[in-house]
Image (cartoon, rainbow, N blue to C red; front, top):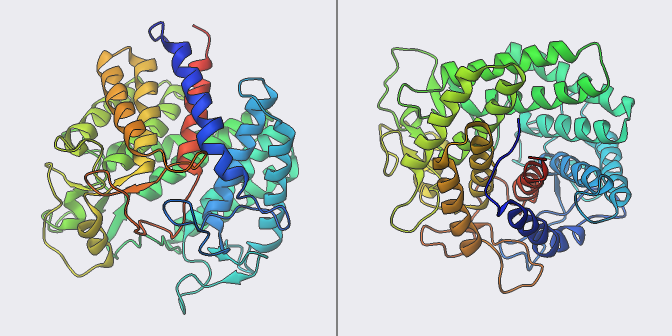
Length: 424
């Protein structure tokens, strides 16, 4: 794939490099825990106060991925900086998780103290309450292994992947902070496993590992689940579907969609579809991205709404008293940082594949909103104020974990920088 854009491509590349290095990274480099490893993420939305030194394993695995990718891009001269420093801190965090995150049953704990002591995030509910923690540890270990050529860390990623795959086969898992009601399936599980398997497969290929084809096939299977089970006839992506086909289709859970999640998922699909030469899926992906913008873009105030009905507008439908329904109804009109960073990359990537100028239009529309809305103008080097209300004003609200997370912004900026750096 060759990336073709207008003559402003170099200007775009320099814009993202500058914003990453001057606005985003100064905040997060100060948040690294040099004593224990890992990063502090429990800040208020403005980034002015560290409210807890607890460490969510979810975020620590993510840190390893972005620090490792940063290290590689610095070593390659694509981004300015000392790549060895970031790789050393990534390794410190690998060691922190190796020593502290794993339970006797092989699962990952969800929450650790600053020093690494295992804690219950929800009192009385246990330590291993979310496979997403395991997934992000796999992703972090995989990226670090690929950059550092550390076969031992890669083997650990594979062992955790095998253990997680068996849990998924048995149905023995939980998905906090988004618990899946009994009798339903969530798009998020297939989506995260698509990303896990494609990243593992990519790195295994660089090692010429005997399991590289197995992981590529697994990535293809998860891609098919996303595109066959959760892709609706109109191109929208369902977040939750009922396992029983006779189940009421007018329920809030099955009617709602998450536009940002759909857009993120679609660039995962594009990545594997290219590897497997599935042009049919790339065509469907393009329909889905456009549909997510059609349903999710707020024509009144701009930006992507968090949740919408499958036909557009506020989520609606029959409720059953599930906590996830409360989350949908309470936060549907918030404007969050992560869907918008995902939309920036996904629209550029879709344009790279298709040369469809509609994706350039959507990219420019998103970029205008993002950089008018999220950067923290009151604090130089202060990252973004990540959580906004419908009108774009900051709100102090927990939307998943009580953290200010660096992952989506930095990951997508790095991916955009790599994409724009490709030779025409």
